[in-house]
Image (cartoon, rainbow, N blue to C red; front, side):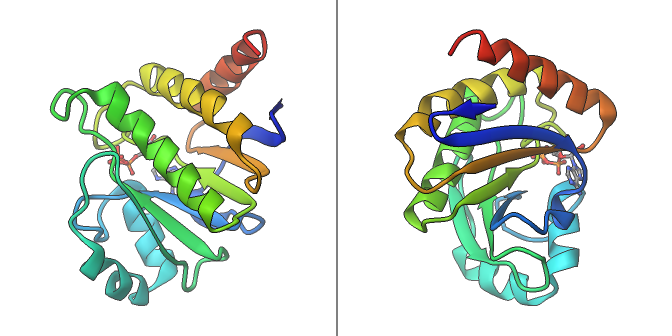
Length: 177
Ligand code: ADP
């Protein structure tokens, strides 16, 4: 489906194998180090040079986004965002929204055409997927019509169940455009 001039889509997959995408988003930790989940997969696939670039940029705050090269990943850039820890970093809706907004804004400034997101904060940080998806989609709905460069936003979900929820929410979004 398109919002403005930008295609949005949801697929089941792994964030580190999105070879047709210019920038992938990392659900990072404040220290921008490897860890569990998405951050672990991205640092492992990128190789140790990623850590050399991220270390001096840390720490970041919930909602912040920073951009680096992607090293051994099949992408040009990694945009690292720190999602809110559900129930601890407040207000969590705004902080989660800022992650998507700031990541897309960075991509736009760099004239990046395609960006792929994991479901930020919905793993170790405990954000319920349905609530997080509502925040995510209402954020992209507002920001996408303002963009010139970003033509594809892909949501990469790790399970069939998560993908089904995204697809249902994207369908519902169509009716509000
Ligand atoms: P956070 O700490 O922001 O919650 P996590 O990495 O723990 O981040 O999880 C975020 C979401 O990404 C979860 O829904 C998890 O199932 C999913 N996920 C974990 N690994 C991958 C991966 N390699 N590719 C895409 N999604 C992933």
